[in-house]
Amino acid sequence: MHKEAFMVELVSLKDRTVVVTGAGQGIGEGITRLVIELGGNVVAVDRNEETLKKLGSELPAGRLMPAVADVSDPEAAQRVVAQAVERFERVDGLCNNAGITRPAMMDKMTVKDWRDVLDVHLSASFFWSQALGQHLIARAKAGDTKGGSIVNISSDAGRKGAIGQVNYAAAKAGILGVTMTTAREWGKYNIRANSICFGVVETPMTEVIRGDKFRDKILSQIPLGRWSTPDEVVKAVCFLLSDAASYVTGQHLGVNGGYHISL
Ligand code: NAP
Image (cartoon, rainbow, N blue to C red; front, side):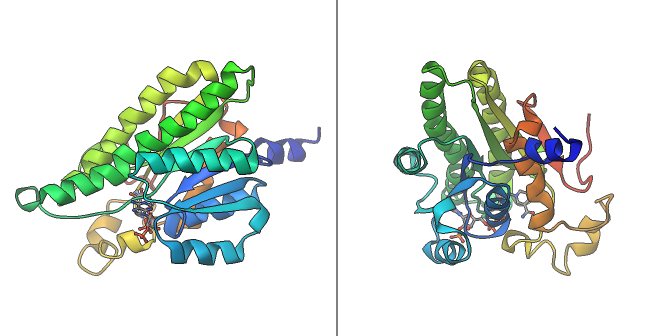
């Protein structure tokens, strides 16, 4: 095979079906668009029906299955994965991306804000991984060797803490534990699991920290000296979903302009 064609095929997601949570806007929307551009199908999960409808009107209907669901509902995870298998015959990948923030200093944080953030990030990552894993394991036991790939969206906050966001930092650190355990338990089924730790991406979630009050201080800590766009960072997600990462599992990839650098 010609070298160029080989490279294209490596990152191709042709005929793969990927569940993307929080697909309605921001990074999830970018992942959805790129997976489809790389030849895949997307099960686009979001609680926001309006943004999903808009996405649906812009992407090929045969390759997109919008699913309105709250990711923190374990029954929704089971239901959507079953519907996706029915529609596309198989599901090969998952990106646990949906997220919220509920900032407050530790001494003032409410129990509700603590629980809501842990539910949407940490518990949901487990619920959706479990639902997909059960499908992939059954497939593997029936002799299918293709396996699957799970990408969990974490954050630099999960590796170094974040003032005013103990709930978010704890949830994102917990996601690293889910990733490592998934990789250890399911490697034998050729199911890979990796995390991505973003720094500051230009989405509605980061409007406040990109504003005048914090901008210069944060930018001075990013070696590349700039925020990233969603389009720039979603390439790393698709790399981990693709065969180009076939021997990569249990890892935490920083996609952050160098905001957090460690061994
Ligand atoms: P975003 O623009 O706020 O998008 C998040 C999406 O998730 C929204 O469509 C949101 O719907 C949806 N969502 C929230 N809770 C949900 C739930 N319970 N069930 C289903 N969908 C739900 O955020 P983003 O910046 O793209 O962030 C995506 C991921 O990257 C998150 O996990 C975030 O923590 C992580 N991350 C982002 C950055 C960054 O700089 N942006 C940095 C590090 C990590 P609604 O519109 O209804 O809220």
